[in-house]
Each structure stands twice: as structure tokens, then as C-alpha cells.
Image (cartoon, one colour):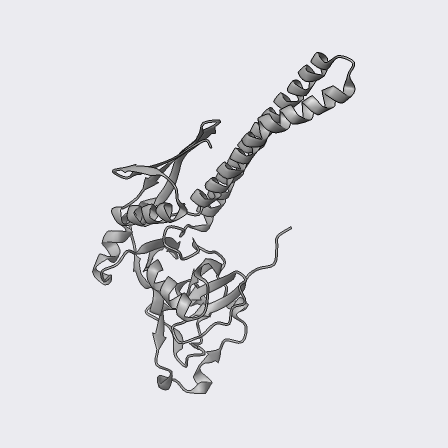
Length: 307
């Protein structure tokens, strides 16, 4: 059974959102992204996405942009936005950027804008030449525009983005893949825990055999031996699980987990980084987390030895 949807807000420069700390979804107006529509001889989204930087290049200022690409009525829609700008705006609006869930774009609701909408800021959201556009409210009479009484009615059918923190920005499909990967890691730890449990039971049986008929001695020896031997292992496994959760917070578009392995000596995680700027961001976060790492080219290797 699916949980209740997050509340959807129109994310607009002049609108303050009163957030109580719960996760919210946002609909970006054209003030916070750039869009271009092109007819291209490509079949799949991943092919079109490779072309996004060159197609959008002449529209963009300096900055590090993320790209969304999808097909609409036979054309490819290219959207570019700067997560850093969105993060700064969210903070000014009183929103914790980490509390932003799904991201939608006004371009996705052009089919619902047959009648322009007046936003709380007074500006008008309308469609011009097939693109969602912001226009001055003074150009329209009240009878010519609608108002936003229910933001949920504006929610597009699909979200192409999740979260705005740079280094955390991932598409909805990628978020499911990441969740699956983390679930697999959790399963590995469960199996590892069962292995240690089996070893502990074997140890207890060995001690009981050595103690013979003295059940009191056997119980005392078993308890003290097992606690001493496996307490350290259990503590280290908890530390590794916590570290992996921290590493997972770094993953997203442009930051991929290539491999992770652990044993009684510690663990090692290898990250592949898309660009030098993102690599610098990841390195800075690792230093704040107190993690030891080595970097070479586009790869960061995180290593921690057993304590």
C-alpha cells in the first residue's frame, strides 16, 4: 500500500512557503529553469540526454547545471537548471533543502494551461509558443485568468527529479535503483550477522563440552567468552553500517558507487565522479565526515580499517 503523497508547492521566487519540517514536492516555474524543444533523430532518452549540454549551451550562464530530457508529442524537451540556485532559494523561503522530495516543472503542465494562471506573486503562468512562461500580471484582466486553488490538480503524471542538494540530485528511476542497491547491502550484513551467530553457537557448544557436567561453569564461560569475542565484531559492524549510510548520502547523478566490500579488517568503497567540481564537493564532505580516502582522476577510494 502506498503512503500519503507529499504536499505539492509551486516553487516561486516571491512566495514564502511555511514548512514544518516534513518532506514536500515542488513545481518549478520558468524562473528557475530554462527549456528548449527540438526534433531529433534519436530514439531513446539516454541518447538525447547526451546531447543536452550542447543543445542548451547558448542559453546558459556560467554554472553547473543538471539536465532533464523527455519526449513530448514527437519532440524532445530539454530542461536545464542549477541545483545550487534552487538550494539558495529554498533556504530564503524557509525550506530545508533536504526536505524537498519530487521535483516537477511547469513545462510539464502546458496542456493544463489553456487558461493562464495567476500565481500568489501576481505574475501569470501561461503558454507561449508551446512553452510555459511567466508574464506580468498587469497584462491580464482578472476574467481572463484562473487562480491556483488546488496545487494537487497541477501535479504532473511523472517526476523526473528527486531532491536538489548537489551531489544528491537523482531521477526517480535512479532513486529506486539506489534503494535496491542499499537493500542488497543490508542483506549482505544480515547474512554476515547470521554467520557470526552460527559461529557463536558453535563456540558455546565447544565450551559446554569442555566444561563437562558443570552447567554453572559452562554457562559462565560461554557467556563471558562469547561476549568478549563477538562484542567487538558487532560494534565494528554497526560502525560500518553507519559509514555506508553516510556514503549513500553522497550518491546521485554524477556520483556513482562502483563497488563496496567489507571484512573483519574494515571496508572499502569506490566512487566514480563525473566532473572535477563534483569531486571537490565529495572530497569536502568526506573530510567533514572524518573519512579517510584517496583520489585519482575521476575515482575516490574510501578505506577504513577495523578498530
